[in-house]
Image (cartoon, rainbow, N blue to C red; front, side, top):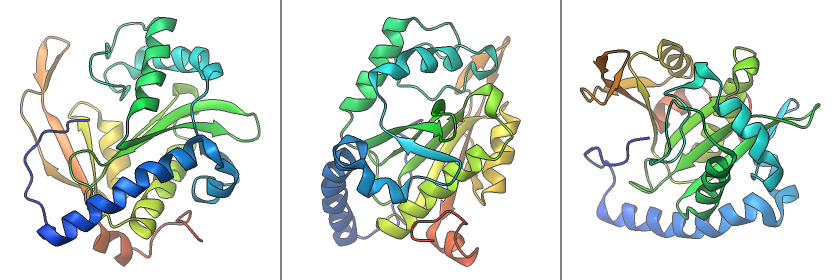
Length: 231
């Protein structure tokens, strides 16, 4: 996700400081969620069908398998510096998991299909640019798309961010050619808020980026989501 776009912050200096202090504490909470006592934090990140959990060493091969699917080219949502559309090696995927685990202002979680204990995707929420306006991204492996799993993941993360943190908005990014991603964001209530031009090159032509966001007030007016925290 792009992290250097210049947006005007809606928070006052005092509220931003408060949020920064909160997310500093959340850095410790994230470690707690991501491996120390996940059984207590699990209520925030699971439904009857799926759960969000920390990445482990045994996830390298299944992660490599679905990231290398040709239909995920250009929308893998992996760290900058790794190729977005050419096959990844085992060593590269190991490095991706390590980098995710080393980030202090980001949470990276595997999406597991509970009944089969199978890794079917990954999700991220990060607050490195603005602690009051975190970013979110979700990737579902090709064979498991369009079955409602991405919606469940999004609802869990939105519920957590809006009901358990000071976030006043959640943002996301996608390429303009990713029509499925745009439709998915609209389904969740996100609105398109910007269009950075010529963000990349694909199939012989430049493409633009699409920025989307969802405000806390919009989330609340919709009644929250089915899988929101505490519901």
